[in-house]
Image (cartoon, rainbow, N blue to C red; front, side):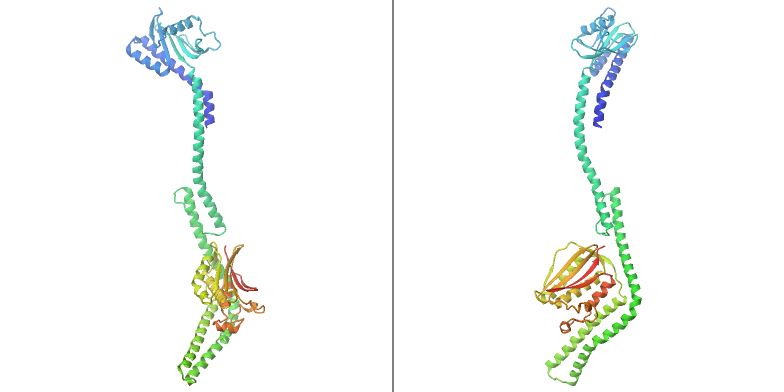
Length: 473
């Protein structure tokens, strides 16, 4: 726009100025002619009006009668103006034959022309001729200022244009940043939504179209998260229903058989010690207290085993619905480790876990915590050597693997395939020592199967690592 303005200035400003000056001189002629016709040309009021016109438009005026007497003059150099008037009228030393003279208008009453002053070599416009009352006149105005004015105007517009370009550039950056920043934010949110990450939200509080779009995307994100959660829950339920019918009979028989087998030993112990108390085998108080402690301990183990068996029964029979939801697994692990800190201190264990950024997974949060609890309890009870427990998290292709490692003796190779079976015990003496029932890893298996996720165990030279995987998408 600045360049176009400069071109228009160079092309049309001078022509516009000349046309405007022509109108001014013609208007002045009409005013003088009207005043001469009405006889007011010598009045004070006309003097004031003529002076205003001459000062405003930078023109000189002279009016002579037929005897060359000055009737009206606005210039101090009236002699020169009178001579110029007569030269033009008599074509003496006039510019009529000068090739630089440009005749703009010529009528039977006056001539309007542009010429050059020989004294100063400056351009001027003059109109000369006759008034209606027979007087002669000359109206003259310098034109040299127009070229300088055009140049000054161009310089000024150039400076203003540079200033406008700088200020406009800064304003454009500010405005475009205000527009593109929320667009980029919305783009980032939509990218995360594409990867099923619904944590990112748009925080604009305005009322423009972008803020309304951001609000709608937030609502869409919440709706999609709820819908996907419901779909995943329904999908899990469907898979469980298909498997449930085929397994229910076999599981019922296996459950009854295992319960009968596992409860046989503690019931026999309770019965034996109870009969001993009844028959008064030992009458001293210390022996009676010992018998009572054995009975209470075995009853407690039976109670805990029955609870676990009921939990396992619900999982395997599909009576416990898996509720799929999205949560931060890092936060869950850290909170559990804080609650289980007393167990680590009792076992003189060193628990290690690196710092991780939040990792969001899709799973049943309470059941995942139960899996972690079983792994951790297993690690605590089989701790040996450096007495170190280490929890690791590793992401890979839409999944995260959570592992619990403890130093100690590796699991015998012939036992690895059986540790997930109900009531299987690698070291029966040690398991009975800490009150283990052999059901914990079976519960882990049932939970992970109910969520259709992988789990496993790996031996190392200095310990054992149990792991399970969860979906992040």
